[in-house]
Length: 98
Image (cartoon, rainbow, N blue to C red; front, top):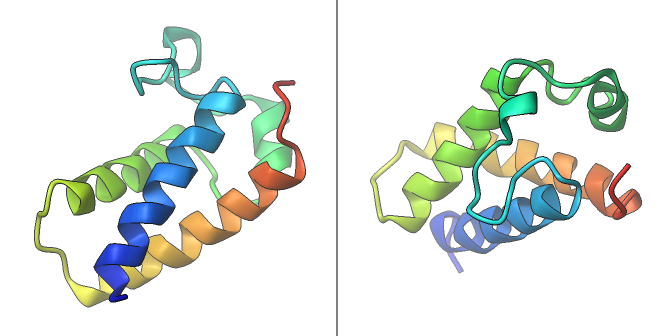
């Protein structure tokens, strides 16, 4: 399995975990109340992995780009995969909505 394939599966898991936490709604969108910034609760959950919603949206978009077949540099794919794995690990440690 190449990095693109593994990032495809990881991004699906990432979005599922975000939905379970209430960070993404059923349609995969960030709820209006959360659009501008991460709540203090989420900042603590992500433990410095993601500082703001721009970073979170960036991870979501790169994962979606991979699933759409968009060509991305190996550096972008590698960095995104690393960050998603770390965020998924944190989310899996706290799978219930807060």
